[in-house]
Image 1 (cartoon, one colour):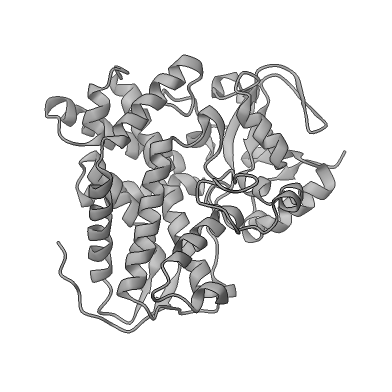
Image 2 (tube, rainbow, N blue to C red):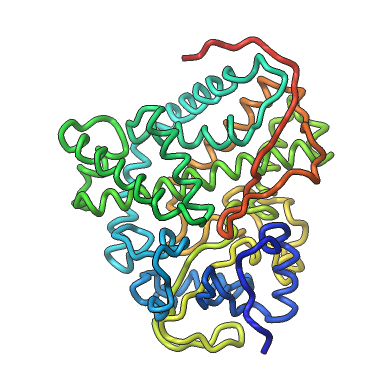
Length: 411
């Protein structure tokens, strides 16, 4: 058997697609891997195998408390924020998970769809007003990375200043570096104060709706849930927007139709979910008992890392599904096979959150292209660099040039 693959270092960050191909050739659909500090796990990269894992929560369970390698985790481990057992829907199982998922869906559905689109447009215009009088901008830091956070903070009832700080800390958590644990702590502390404020003075926001929900959250549970919602909705949506803009600005299929062709926006967003999914990997699932998967014997308590991006590129899937984009929607409906960028099964991304993410992404790209139709990359496309995160696929910067325009003055 070949040696385990290390899921960290420049080789993975620079060209994950090539690494996935090598893994598949050498190991098959289930790959022995080493996380930071050489902590062992399995990476599931086969579409059929991953679909099976996501569809059988009684065999491949969600709670990190089942993990058999906690004794291998060093103090201050950078992946602790994404693997630590927390009282939220990400770690919950069975009836507890269904209770939490229902509460999250209900709270997000409580926002009026028309108002969401209107506020997203207003916030997008405000951000563009901040740089449209210049001839250049970094669309990641000045736009894509900020818009989802601002909208989520509006939904939570937070002001922009606190939202900016939380955005920075969440990016640090997903970069899985040495500061990730401290950043996670600052987010939790801010949400602890927010929950106390909303219990004292409820408002028309997500936090107040979750407090009032029959799920009957404790403060600790609610804080953990709010962190989980933020991480899932903000970070991945920001990278979805950024990756779609990179594609449209660098690929001739889209670059020729930047102005006026709104249908190409949705096509670019769908292609990103298949080819450059913001959700590269997710941790994870834990074997409830010894089980065979993809020719491997997975022992009780073993960690399985979910290789969403690799599974979307599975040659078996592509051979059966035809063209990578034709006939597909962001949710995967209408395709022979659905992409796994929103995960699958009862632990998949909540339905309401998927709709929210799509509203944010489509609106963000359409408003930007309407306002600045002559956008161009300021550097060659091959010089755009990717973030050093094993979990999230997104660019480090997206510098562009354009003809300066007058702010709309949206407040």
